[in-house]
Image 1 (cartoon, rainbow, N blue to C red):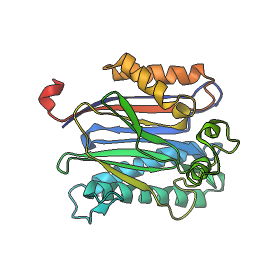
Image 2: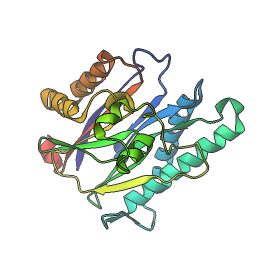
Image 3: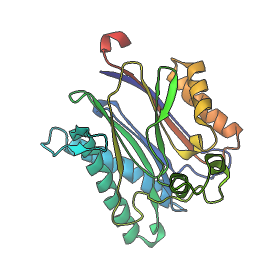
Length: 261
């Protein structure tokens, strides 16, 4: 297994500070994007703490004899369990900090994370909130996460149309975020990665202004230079207003390391 990648983050054109955080940990085959919220310093602290905590938990649980997590499609994975535990620990840490410091009360963060496990031949995807993970395979793009948001809930219930989602007045309201309450229920998905796959993790500063087809087009135009792809997507988000912080991680998965060389 060989994974190469690139990461970019940008404050954008409107916000005074960047409340996004990212983690790029190739030694652990772990990658994460977190989009903080909470005003003043809260969002910045929440996203950074979530990244730090999850990385620490994954280091602690490496090689532990854990009960595999089983997803809706019937797949089971210890890597998925490790991600699930890590995001729950992050929720505890962020919530506890917000309770101790009145200036941080109400802070929280989204999380979208991927953990590759070579032994299990699996990619574990775990998220809370509306940061996303996509997979590009054979010239097609597929979203691997479903937003924990009010607009996604209304779409699922058939109360609004997909064409209304981008302009829905409460489209930024989340139904879940890390650290805003004592309990969180992360979504876990297990994937069998294939050589040539590209995984994309991003905050809503990217996917909120660039649709899936444009994301795919830009990556195809700039491939195989993932750094150029990241730059192009962040630049486009800023050209379209840059109203939010934007963060993106691109990962190229190669099954046989000799192919990458």
